[in-house]
Amino acid sequence: MRPIVQISLDVVTIKEAVTTAEMSLRAGVDWLEAGTPLIIAEGMNGVRALRERFPQTPVVADLKTMDGGYLEAELMAQAGATHVVVMARAHEETIRCVVKAGRDLGIKVMGDNLACDDMIAGARRLEDLGCDFVIHHIGYDERRGIAASGRRMPSPLDQLREVVKAVQVPVQAVGGLTLEQAVRTPEYGAPLVVIGAPLAIDANAFKTASGNLEESLKLICDKVHAYGDVSS
Image 1 (cartoon, rainbow, N blue to C red):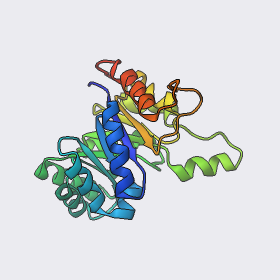
Image 2 (cartoon, rainbow, N blue to C red):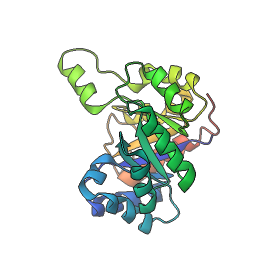
Image 3 (cartoon, rainbow, N blue to C red):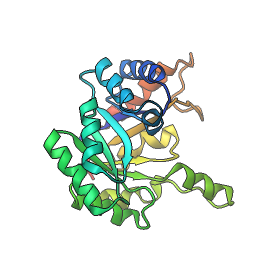
């Protein structure tokens, strides 16, 4: 699979989401994500605004469905989402309902293994139940809670190779990665690269002489796309 760069629009207004999306697409980003904060703040209007402004661009709606699977997937699809996210910790029937909605409505389903006791088994469960992609995800609160206790903060990279080997569907790694780490996930066999927004260019990674954010993001996209086809 050719590597994909996805921008996570984790902002709380439609205006900021659209402005960031415009800049990101100019830089070479492939997919837009209506992040959970945007959906909480703006509801399906946030997804709808992205679809209206960018009619040809895939839009991931990261609602993190836990129940009401068919209805939530249907609402997101009607708003213009091309991809929806269901959680591995949801009931098996909820995952099946989201997958059925995906088939009925022509959208793709991304299964998220956040908070699974066994992340590898969680990824396999998602694939077995019909998800089109697996998101290998270490959560925001989990990372910071563990770090605050003085222990090493976990990373999706810790088990990424094992997750990739465990499933046949494409994998995305999310949660606390630096930009350089995110850009290297195709080297682990995970072709779906997520860049968070608002963007933070740090550690001198992909920083242009002018400090221009769009130019920096273009460097990131060029690097990811240069991997060519990625296989597990």
